[in-house]
Length: 178
Image 1 (cartoon, rainbow, N blue to C red):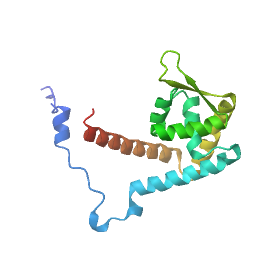
Image 2: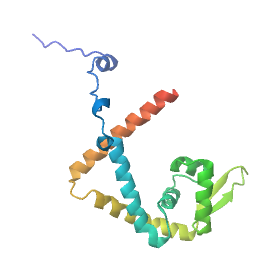
Image 3: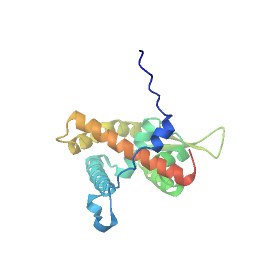
Image 4: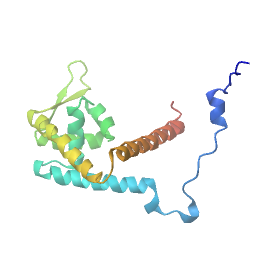
């Protein structure tokens, strides 16, 4: 007698029957220093300080290297795009670009097609500074990952991506966006 095919319910109904997610934090014994957010913020702060220390001889601050790298990687070409990429408001981006322009690293150029658009270009000095950034960032990140195996590093990145996906899903739910 032939084996009977097992029918699985549609994906949505399987998800509906999935057990509730565990609750990791409880108000009665919450300790900030044990929260994932606190630990991530502390790590980010130490990484940022170390990157800034490494870039200090080049005259760059932690805030300044990010737009240089994004411009050099082609992630943005206008002031508005760069502000979004750097998660800065228009005023903050203007002040940051003023400093980068004063250092001779970035140039603002009005668009010929739309005078409201300001395009950004790295100067020769800006391109030279941007080419040094990956080596500095790799050195700092590798130092912070000391003692991790390659598998542990990949696993950690996977966990962090899952947290980020959850965070983006929460934002989308709150704003009503898909």
